[in-house]
Image (tube, rainbow over all chains, first blue to last red; front, side, top):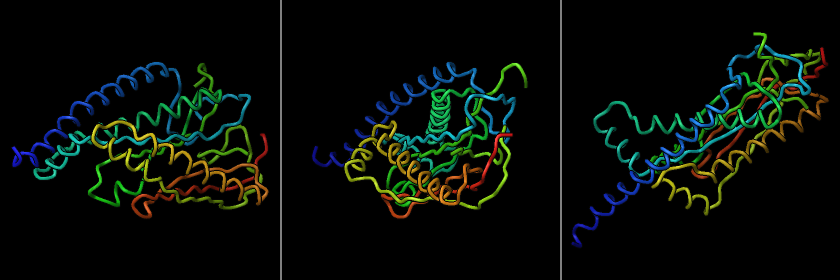
Length: 158
Length: 106
C-alpha cells in the first residue's frame, strides 16, 4: 500500500481536477451563453471608426475588462501528455475561449452600465502575468485584457 | 477627460496634439493570493485575485497617464494601448500609453 501512495496521489488529483474542472467549465459556459443571448442587441465591432453613431448625451469613452481563468489538474496533465505526441491541445483551447468570451461580456456589461449601447475597436490580448509564463512548472492560467470604446448608436441607420 | 482606444472621436475635432503620454505600474500579488491560485489550479475556475490585481494595475496605469495628460493641458487621450510584461515570477508590469490631444465638439 505504501508503495502505491506516490502513484495514488497524482491519480486522485487528476480525478478531482476532472470532476471539479468539468463542473466549473460547464457552469461558466452556460452562464456565458445566457449573457451572450441577453446582450444580443448590443453592437460589438472591432472597427476603428464608430459605425452608425448618433450623438448621445455622453462622448465616447474607453471601457476596460480583464479575466484570469485557471486550468485544472486534469487539463494540465492532458496537455503535458499532448506535448509528448504533438497535436491539438483542445483542453487549453477552451480555456482561452472562455477567458475571451468572459472579457467581452464584461466590456459589454460595463458599457451598458455607463449608458452606452455599442462598443467599437474591441481589443483582446493575452497578458503576461508573472508566474504563468516566467515559471514553466506553474500550471497554466490565461489572463486576457480587453479594451474597447463605448458609444451611442442608432439601430435604424447603418 | 475623454479617453478612447480609437484614433478619432466621433463628434469631436482634434485641434492640438500634445504628444505621447504614458503610465506604468509594477504590482505583485501577496502570498495569500498565490496560495489560493495554486489551489484553483487543481480544480479550475476563475482566479478572482489575479483578475482584481489586473484591474487595480490598469486603473493605476491609466490614472498616471491621465495625470501626465493634464500636465500637458490636454482634454482627451486617443488611441490608448496596453501592454504587460512579467518582470519576475509573481510581479507583472502594466503599461498604458496614448496620445494626448485637445479636442473640441464639432
